[in-house]
Image 1 (cartoon, helix red, strand yellow):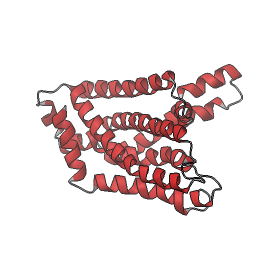
Image 2: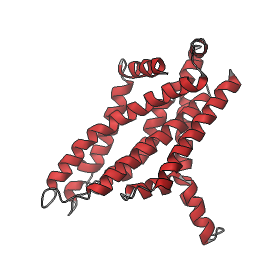
Image 3: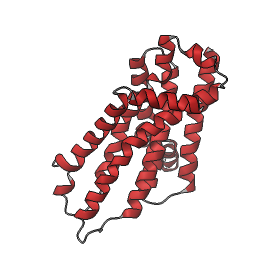
Image 4: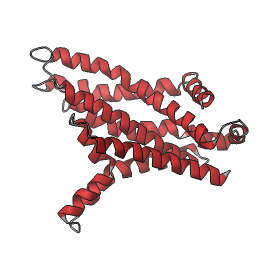
Length: 242
């Protein structure tokens, strides 16, 4: 597993892929936080990082499928997938190696945003007048959201040999599981009880809950479960095709 992990990390940073992912993420978030007048922290009357945590899922929607689309689609297109199977590794170990490599790249993109936290912290009046508990909870929520999107994107990559199709499919599945259930729950055919139940199926409900700074074990279990389900589905697809 570790050999696959380091191979993927080296592949990311020996080309422009890793630097592009980190650069695009930071520029996108930076524009919303500091430049665009509708969302700029500088135009607010109080110190907040809500822009980062509300925009990040939308950026992840395109960024993470762009990272994961090559995981298996490229291997199958180049015919190197057989080389992976020839190694003394199980399918699950191969998938875990690639999963943690993709997840690490996303974490590398998130870490520099701590500079934004320091900047907003200094802008507070008085200095430090910031809800740090909610921000820590939001970062934890982003880590889990990234983990879920990476697992979804990797499943999409196993379903096709074409990286562009893998990207589109991954983005669609991430959108569906994150936002679609919130919209479905608003349909008038559902009662109040079913409304809440349907919302809880979607990722957005649990991400929003953690972002409030309240770390609920049910939200943690949900994210771990959805990551496991998609990784297991990825294993099933690969073993069936192999």
